[in-house]
Image: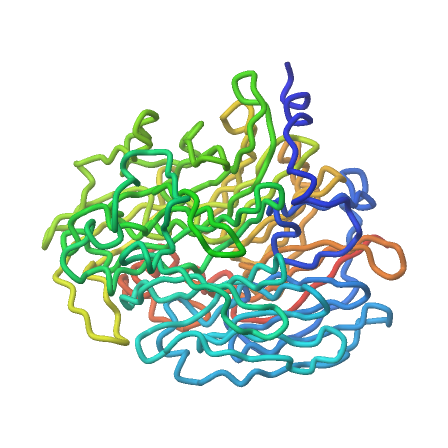
Length: 581
């Protein structure tokens, strides 16, 4: 049976992936997080003719990781700090500004942002635009007028707590979580009433079961995740209070099962010697009831995480045959380098295959679900362990993949990076970095630092893969025209044949691209593709933060790898929108 035939039997659940309506109302496109558009006016035969239709400058020259979203005839663009939201009128030539909303976050938040002053986008629901701010607020804005409906403070920047994630809107609630793992901030997720901003429930990622909302309905698949108050007992005394596990990544929602899925970040500090034990419930994934917050199951990608391998990446919800039986799965390219296929009803690991070069582990034990660590690459106090692959940002960081129902492939933008790692004594002081490690990163085998891989889910192997000189830090987009889009840190916006990987078109933007491409049907009935250009984030901090390339440890060691990036791009902040002639 060909890959194509298998691919056609792999589909997102219809309830989580409604029929194409030409809009793009949330960064993930839909609850299944496919980042797939059913539009096909732009296709492999004509994509080479794409041209710029309009641009918009945000006036900010920091990392632009956000997704431009489209609701009706309006595009909403969110810039990095100071996090101004712009509404653009797509019915008029050049898409002029309709209104802008300025939340005016506290300036001091910039000083405790881990990895640039980024934001991963707004989302829409019930006539409102929702997004988080760097000073740990969440806001709701009237989508038609830009009027602030509510603005709630959820965290404290004085302890290093920030917010950068894109919210999820579902069941009349807005789900958001905090950042700050590098400051020893205790992670949490909160459900807010979408109409009022009032908290409905809050679940922590560490601590006693009552705080984590673990009760009688919690049924993890593996023994390693079973037990009472593991969020306390798998830590040294009181260490869970600075334990990290922050919820700063992506959420998916299955309306049929009525479950939300999200990952938890790295434990604090990075140095694993300071926190013996599995460090629940960090570096894993939760399934929860969205109405009550009650945990249903949990699986830990990286027990006792050794390398800052946050577990916050996207999870794509799919229904597919597995070993002759229909299964409800979630597919997850994880930071530790494995492409996981999990049964999303139970948390059972069905497959875990390496999608990038790695030597930090030797696979996943399919009986216990546990990652098999490589002791030769384990960190050691006051000793440099060299060539650990992947690095702290992982084989793939926050930048989400896409899935095409036409090919059955998941398209993964990712890294090819290794690091030298030295464990040092950590010292917790509220509001200051809590890491306990000296790191320098460098290119992996082959000398390239980035890759873009099409992964055949049914065959459990790559269909094709391309190398990039720098880490691929942008998201990607798949379309019914059999075209996939992504950006590079040098500033190229590329379109590839989704089946073969052949380069069909590219456009050089004014800055490196780390944003999330989206596509929509305009009021004129034609298809458009949008991307924010503006290098930065952790990988591009040397440019956006004007860091000294001679300091190999700057940006937590990333500068050692990307020291030449300033020779290829400059800081910027511009929206580009393309269409066919």
